[in-house]
Length: 197
Image 1 (cartoon, rainbow, N blue to C red):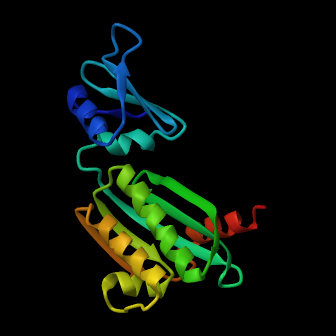
Image 2 (tube, one colour):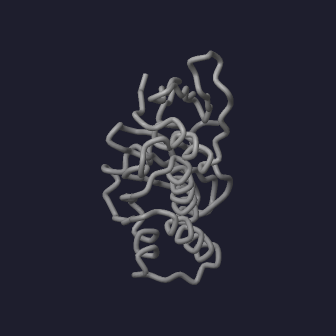
């Protein structure tokens, strides 16, 4: 059970800034409680204890300066365009703190790649992460976000603008193209979602 050494009032403010509601404690010793995702935080006089299946749903929000994370993203499309899915993973020094994989309907491979990135960026923002090192095996997405390549496709242009808007909310970010072997968790999540009928 993680214990976050933080002033309980400061912790409450951080949670409220992140849109997480706090409620009065259940006992005389508890100052307040908060639930977010699969985690519950309980504040005492000098510390906050986090419980639950995924404590990082709250611990990243409670720590000063949400920290740094690696984001891996991948999209998959069968038919291009065809049935498509996304996969993404967020990794910190605590390991994988969030991941997802789901079908997104009919899309091209490039649209799926962008959609995977957008979902990962929103999850990183919701976790309160400050700095991102983004990794993906899509040269198109990487080079477009860096400004090295352009696009005439209106849908991809819109997704690039959305990604740039989300990235502005982080203190620092960088994006790098990596081989599929390094991006294997995101790739697995996208393909598992596509195969799951």
